[in-house]
Length: 367
Ligand code: KG4
Ligand code: ZN
Image (cartoon, protein in one colour):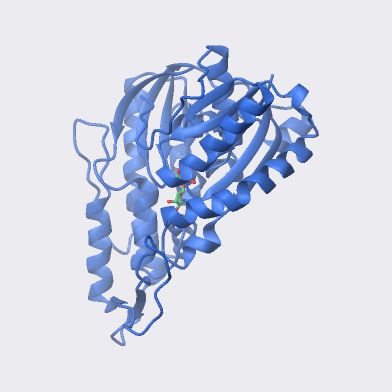
């Protein structure tokens, strides 16, 4: 069964074609990072406008990459949420139009569930050599760490979840993004912090972890504030934009972001600050995941979302977990439509299809 999926929940326009929930036939991703970078974060209105411009060329390319015609496509899936409303609308409407015009079932997929199902996709290398990993085994523990979400959930079967814990303030990726902004490292923050931390001393600064004992919840805002205080001690401050700097046009356009500038002669140990921050953030994720995996006797751990790309997180999980764990290849960690097609496949198998009254769900929950 071939599913065409559309993903536009945030700042990636993506269309994919996936066979039987696991084999990627095409996965075209147009990133908007260059656009949002100048504002230090995603501007929803601008994201929506760029999705509208990009969606058809991306669709066209995906169909050509997959080499399928419409008679070989069985269903159309789209991300219904969670995500940014103006961005989600573009993808859901595109999927509705395709479903209507081509008379194919329409599937609505939860974005977080999509991230989880990126672990079902067979990486290209495995597909080519025929050495695909077997499917994940239940019960599994899912650690979802993205720009908007940080959740620990038990997965008992397809579409069957039990939420164990979540962030009570910033998401893990959001914490990386804010930390990068504090250190003047740019957007997106995760890769920037990881890079800056290379060669840094993770023990130089002892940043706080909010253990929230007795729960599997997370909190990253105290860590972010501690980093801010420490950088201020070194005289690194956000320089407000000058009043004569040109502001971008449009209602939703944010103020020009501040720039980090040192105001004292003391050298700022950026590498050590980044390494210590990264160590503290990863520590909380790893310790809670290890404890939950042990308590619930899971067969494996599935890591998903943009922060799953973090190499320290992967290494530390490998050291701490007593059960196998897996994470998607880099390109499938961040937003992509292949994961939406994979989740859609298992939803389709359970006959969860939608009619044309389907609406977006910007605050959708998956568990
Ligand atoms: O899953 P995703 O593409 O977007 C959401 O659905 O939210 O994740 C994007 C997030 C960003 O916050 C980005 O900073 C973070 O993933 N990220 C990383 C790394 N690569 C991306 N965080 C830590 N280390 C990385 N290497
Ligand atoms: Zn995502």
